[in-house]
Length: 268
Image (cartoon, rainbow, N blue to C red; front, side, top):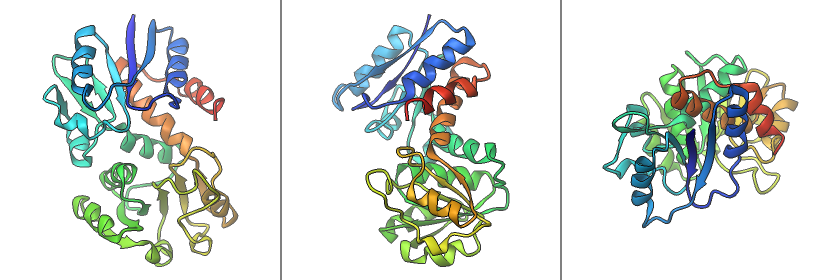
């Protein structure tokens, strides 16, 4: 019996358990996915307990994605270290390794929709955790990245860390998007209300637009992008593929993407 899980606080809202359990059923894998909710003070002890109990892998969510990097128990890979956050732990080896599948999840969501990234001009809105992961992922895939953020200094700070990137305020979005190929909203704008961080008149038919928000699936940004003739990718695809990458890392098997996608979307 394999035990995988999610560690964070809170975790009750997570859609990872049904998505991963559907994968185990499809693969015929004797495994369970369990949620853990330690406090900030007991987080390190929880990691030690997971290793001692023989847990194979954990996803990591708020507020512990950065805390993992400081853990003496975990050896983070190069991408997670550059991003500054770990969202996947692999306990299968002698050393607990830390990875960031938010970046690869975003890239797989785009490439699954046949969005070309090599040589593309990409605009990432938001310089928080998701924005960092996506910006690094896009740059590693060969895209030229511009980061736009409400607080411009944060955009410049992220751009300084991402090779070849540039930082901007939101007021520059219209000019940035005029010649862009890819737009990713990595903020939470659109989750709680019918708002968008991007002016509708800046959208055009040559864009591929992905929104990291997955509740609702069709945000105002995606509606307006579709109306402008742009290709759209909803946030559930990024959520799906970060889970797919974690599962494949833990098990060494090809993930049953269709079963995981069905389980995820049935709960949205």
